[in-house]
Image 1 (tube, rainbow over the protein chains, first blue to last red):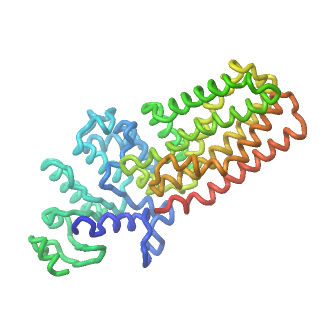
Image 2 (cartoon, helix red, strand yellow):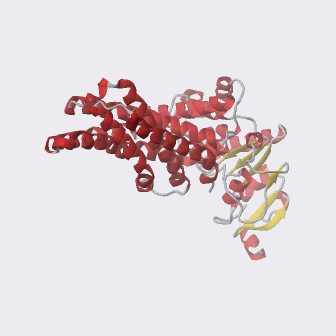
Image 3 (tube, rainbow over the protein chains, first blue to last red):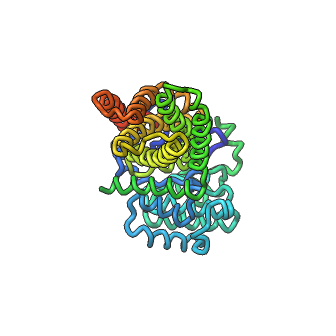
Length: 195
Length: 225
């Protein structure tokens, strides 16, 4: 959690290995992030942007992601995911032809299609309507039950409290607080005062 | 084998995207046609050095028009954060570079075919008298331009610089290719396929090998944020 500019996205990009740290070292199982294809395969990322190619259909976008991450039986997996996100009817639509909330669902499916052990999500709830937020919260909880770890950023204390079991509060690139979600203060200004 | 397959899918994705969007290739071909028309209209005034001028104009038309396609190869990935997604896939950056290079070679190949045909029709250039030699020099010239363009395109893309920078960065590096390809084309037009022609072809081959190798070695460092 943290305000705009607190370093949430940068931290996720560093964890994913697509941005370099200014100082210190970030290791996954003793190796730098992104050092090997096997490590990259363990990670899934859902960025704030949709990461969907505008001229490929939803099905092709997911198929491309599945083939790049070497998913077995990619076509079946793509059909399953389209079903799961409720967009089978839009399989042949381009990302620009569907709503932002629908794109967000496809984006989530794109990041999860290879069953990564750790999923990094940047503001996954933003732009989703209430129904979409409930869907995503349920999805995150089901991933937890399947022993997939999720690291997501949010502004919203409510989402942090309902979908997580550990919360880190960032401010100006520094770790301000490490807390159990139930102990989080509902008033975000208190975090600022603590700084 | 699997990495070669993933490279194939990147090429597939780029070609399908370009086919549907029609962003880079039509503009590139249009510019190539216009430049060739403009140059060919001036050739009558040149006199004795006609074949030399013609050879240079062919390769300048290919270079400047080809920049439009080279620009797009990595810049297109910036849309909607797709570049980050591509870098996060379990695939070595070398395969991304080789896939982009393949697409650029294909684009430039189509452009070369159009420009060469136009020159044959408009200027009566005897390029078809030596088809294999023309194919060889076209391939090597294409590889040289594409290798440099793809490599520098990755730098422009990762630094979020504007696309027009690419032509300015590429032109000084590509000058030896333009000179060598122009000279080899002139010799083909004059029908002198001899030791001198092979020397220029050798230079083109060395250039292509050096820059493809440089791309393979450097791409990992160039695309870092």
